[in-house]
Image 1: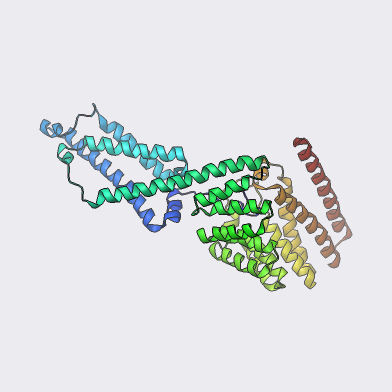
Image 2: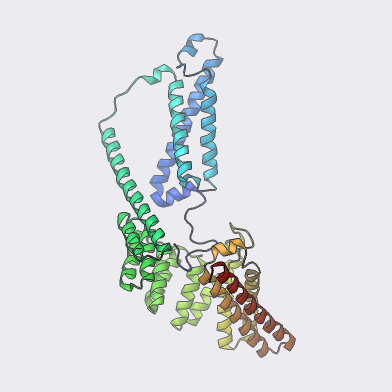
Length: 414
C-alpha cells in the first residue's frame, strides 16, 4: 500500500542500492562494522588456509602435506570457488540490495558456512586442538539467540497480518483495518506498519486513530517519510501550522525531496507566505538541472512531474504579482515537462509509478498551465496565433484524456 505522494522516481524507496549502506542505516555504525568484520574474517581465514595448502602442496616434504585433513582429493578448488562467490556477492551488493532478498541471503550464509567448514578441515591439524570457551560466550550466544527468536516472531507475525490484511483490503472487507493494526502492534519498531494502519484509518475516516498511528510512526522512526505523511494529515485537516512544522522536519531529514518541497510550498501559500513558497518552488527548479534531477535510476521516459508543479507554482505567483513575462517563461517550462509526460503517459513505466489520483492531478495541472499560459501571453502582447495554438493543444489533451478514461473503464468492465 502507498499513499499519494509517497512514491517518486528518486524519493522514498524500500532499500538502498547498497546492502552494506542499508545495513548501516538500520543498525548504525556498530552494526556495519560488525558485518564488515565478519565478512572480512571469513575471507581472511579461507585465504590464509588456501595459502598454507598451496605451500604444503609445493613442499618437497611429504610430512608437511600429511598435516592436512584429507577431506577430498583437492578441496582447495571447492574452497576457492566458495571464496570467489563470497567476493562476487560482496562486490555486487555495493550497487544493489540483493542481500535483502531472502533466497540470496540464505544462499550467502550457506556459502559462508561451507567455506569456513572446508577451510577448518583443510587447515593444519594443529589448529584443530579444542580450546575452552570463556563463560560469557555461551551466555552471550543464548541472549543473542533469544533476541533473534523474539524479533523473528515479531516480524513474521506482522508480515502474516499484513498479507492477510492486504487480501481482505482487495476484497473491500472492513476487517482489513484490524489486521493492519495487529501488524503494527506485532512489530511496533517498523514505521511502515503504523503508516499502513493510518492509511486504513483514512479509508474508514477514523481521524482520531489516524492521527495517533501517524504519531506512533514518527516515534518509531523520525524520518522524512513519517514526517511527510504526518504533514499530509495536518494539511488535509487544515491545520496549516502543524503541517508546516511536519513538512519542515521532513525536509530537514531529506532536503532534496521534491514531494516535501511541493507540499511545504502549498502550505506556505495557504498561510499567505508567498515569498517562502516561491523559495521552495525555486529550490525544486534548481534541483531539476542538478545531478539529483539529471541522473535517474529509471529509464529516461519516466517523467518527474513535480518539476512542472514547481514551474507552474512560480508562474501563478508571478501572474498574481503582474509579472507576466516571468509567468510566461515559467508556464512554458511547466508545459514542456507536462508535454513529455503526456507523450509517455500510457507507457508501462508511467502506469506503474503513477497512481490514478496522481495521473488525474497531472492532467488537471496540464489544463491549468495551458489556460494560464494563454492568459499570460495575452498580457504580454503575444501573437494571436501562438495563443490559439495553445488553445488547440488544450482541446486535444482534453479529448485524449476522455479517450483514456473510456479505455480504462472498458478494461475494468464498467
